[in-house]
Picture 1 (cartoon, rainbow, N blue to C red):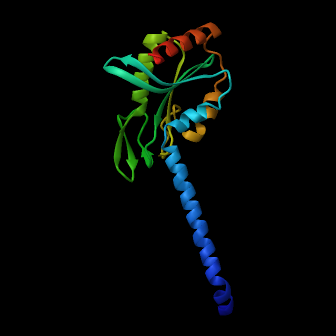
Picture 2: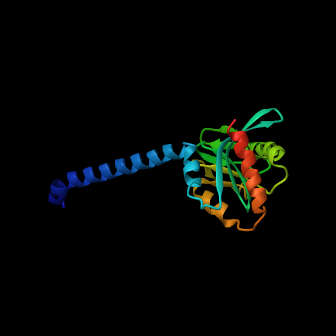
Length: 186
C-alpha cells in the first residue's frame, strides 16, 4: 500500500486539485455571467416568432420615470419582467415589504411592488391589456415560495411558454407593440 501511494499518490492528488480548480473556476464564471442582466435578454431571444421582446423600455411614472428591463408581448398577454441579480439565499413572503438575502443580511425591497409600478406606468400607454408580472432572480436561491410570479432564471422561458391561452387579438397585440416601440425610440 505504501509503495502504491509513493508511486501514484502525488499524481492522484495533483489530478484532484486540478479538477477541483477547474470546477471552481467554471462555477464562478457561470455565477458572474448570471449576474449580468443581459443574460435574461439573451434567454428571451430564444422565444419563438410569436413573441416580441422589447428591452429597456423607459416610461413616465407617477414619481418620475420607470425603467422596465424587458417586456414580452404576444397574443397570450404582456409579460413585464423585473430582473434581480443579487446573490445569496432569499427569504421573505410575497406580501412583505422587505425580503432578506443571506448570508449578507442585505435587505431587498419587494420586487413585486416594483413590477406593479412598471405595469401601472405601461398601462397608461397601452390601455388595459392582460399584463403578466414576472420577477426573475438570476443568482439568488429562492428559499421560500414567493408566489407564482417570482422565479429563477432557468424557469424563465418555460414560464413564458406555458401560457397558451389567447388574451389579446392580433390587432391589439400589434397596437401594444407599436406604442411601446414608439416610446422606446425616444
